[in-house]
Each structure stands twice: as C-alpha cells, then as structure tokens.
Image 1: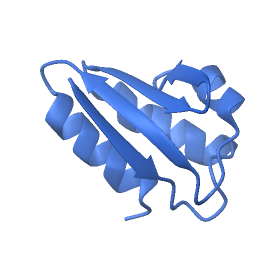
Image 2 (image 1 turned 60 degrees about the vertical axis):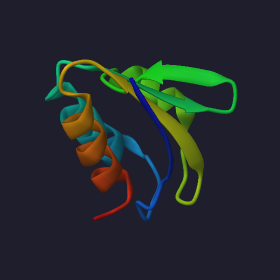
Image 3 (image 1 turned 120 degrees about the vertical axis):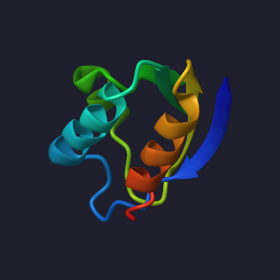
Length: 84
C-alpha cells in the first residue's frame, strides 16, 4: 500500500471534465485507489464520488493505492493531478 499527499495543480480544479479524466486514469489499474480530503474518502474510480469532493487547484489531498500495480497507478495519478 502506498499513501501520498498530492497538491492539485490542475488550473480549474477537479470540475466535471478533469474528474472524468482522473477516473479514466484510475480505472486503467487493478489496484484500489482512494482520494481523501478533509473528512471524506472516495473511490477514485467513481465519477460521482469524485464529484462530491469539489476539489480546487492548490488543495491538498491524500491518495491511497493498494494492489499489484500500485506503483504505476500512483505515478500516473500524481502526474495527472500535478498538471504534467
């Protein structure tokens, strides 16, 4: 299991389109992937769950990845959220 704090660097935050793209990135992996912010913890593969977070640029989140492809999953999720 990997846990990593990440600061969102996507210009408009996680609105509908960026959330959909994040869910696509997360769904490529077998690992369980969760995003935590404040008191909420949601499955990164759930578009509805991710929309409930209402994340903005500059916010800090905690990403947890657990599974056999966790390192690749974390690397690509961090890359996406960092705006790279």
